[in-house]
Image 1 (cartoon, rainbow, N blue to C red):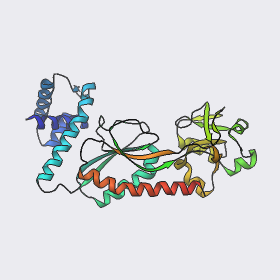
Image 2: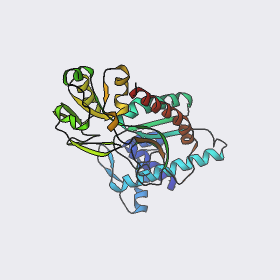
Image 3: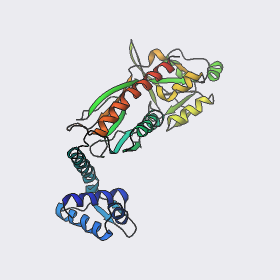
Image 4: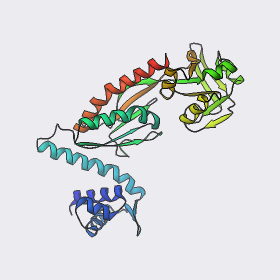
Amino acid sequence: MDRIDSVAAFVEAAERRSFAAAARRLARSPAAITRAVGELEARLGVRLLNRTTRAVSLTEAGERFLSGARRVLADLEEMERAAAGEGTAPRGELRVTAPILFGRLHVLPIVTEFLGRFADVSVALSLIDRPVDLVEEGLDVAVRIGPLAESSAVATRVGAVHRIVVASPDYLAQSGSPQAPADLGAHIVVAFSGIAGVQHWVFRNEAGETSVAIRPRLIVTTAEAALDAVRAHFGITRVLSYQAADDIARGSLRRLLWAHEGDELPIHLLYPGGRHPPPKLRTFLDFARPRLRRRCEAIMRAIRS
């Protein structure tokens, strides 16, 4: 095999965790795939895959090499299509990442609609609540909530969300509504460790910043669990506005302390900089931008209702 073939063999084996599966995908023998990966490792002077009798796994060097290998193969594929006169047609796999709940509620519907329009594109959607490096993890586009770190990625703002405090009408009827952040000390608090902290909540208004110590009766690790608790009339919680927008619109939850919410958190679409986006990415960005903007606007209308 030549260099490109050996890189392709490595990528297939790494992604499928199997030389046999890679061989079936590439219509080659398992021995040929094993030999190609071995030659690549010998040329690089580093082991990329760990072998066992049942499967293969990436080494640390293999993880680093995999993202670059994916980009090389994707670029080659685009070059071949352009040379064949197909350079403007969106084709191939698109790798997208987004926060878990926002992705499920607002990105997944856009992705499925996109796939319905473009039959030659497939999407691998990774829903995860931590920032990821697009280049290192071989991703094409990300939806990111919050301030952006310095990077070479190209970012387009599509909307914003707020940190909001919510409770059910039944709870408020029984316990009263806090009029200022300091009033939270007299209330049952459900803390969601993923967004607002479990010891202090920070609020901002025109007068400045206020840090309020909270003593939660219940601490959970997901927004869904926190919202389930307050829907059951157990206290007050703080989440991102999109997480409670439907409840507020239905009237099952009420937004509290809105004058103290502070700065909004921007939502961006990001893609790796440094090269011209391939047709599949350009098409997805053009498709997703206006739809995400409309969804973000709907969230803002819902929490103001």
